[in-house]
Image 1 (cartoon, rainbow, N blue to C red):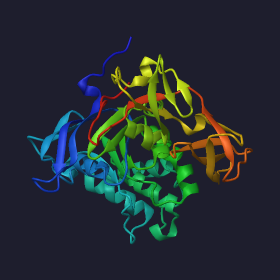
Image 2 (spheres, rainbow, N blue to C red):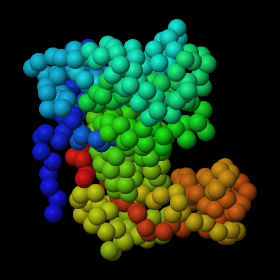
Image 3 (cartoon, helix red, strand yellow):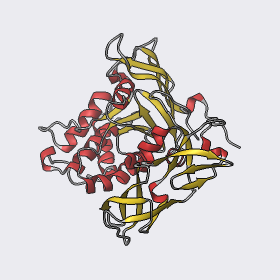
Image 4 (cartoon, helix red, strand yellow):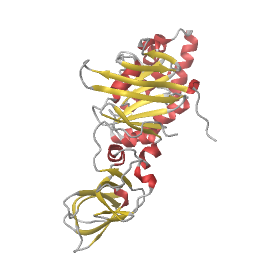
Length: 375
């Protein structure tokens, strides 16, 4: 038996929050409603310009919403009343970390603590020592930012945000300034640090793997609105809109036409379950779009095949192939790295029916079929 969380367990509540650059301009954040429970990590995922950083700034208090309400820890901070950033009990980790170059690691962390707390100095020193240990910076107390690696600077910024024990930690693309290998390693470290601190957090990212691996909940944004909110598994396995399927899973889309109790595509006929319809009513539709994941596409060399290999990218554990079908449309297949088809090879392409989903042929910008958190 599932129990709905009480209002006291919500650390963040947004109700129809809206913000525009100009009064008559299009909304950058458009009627966003969202709830986050105590201790959860939420990833705000979307392409550049979708409004995710602006939404984070609204929560932080750097911008006032023109409509809607925001509550943190059950206390209204925007809407009928306005609470300034320094009184919202939030910690902020900026994209460039915003460390003071003339202050040591300890002094940078202490700055955040001193600005938000009246703790005794001895207690403050103990807290600084705790958070530095938490982020793995023992022994680096006296170093300056320029003497640290990018990953170490990021940890200092996180330690500074966590030191005052804020109700909510906000992180604006915290890993974007790191090289690929460091970013990959710090993903898990960042999650471990936030979980060990018992922190509730929101982090902004345009990296789908980052969002899926760090977050407890993922909110996918598009053109200022939420397309879908759910667990990483829900977002990946059950995308609610074509945009989510394309952006998060990088799926292929095949034109599909009804044929008896199945849907006919260039890769064969597929029987689509009710769950794969995403709540859409396609009875009588002359065509739709069938989602097929790249990892579920297969091909075999065949001189009489109707698909042609246009490009091949070797990725180590697998290869990514761009295939052109007879209609001229292109799809992506991810195959074992031991498979090697040269560009120009004719192949027979097919797809496994597992995890297919069906979407209407048109999915205009702004439409959202599911914005409620799937729990």
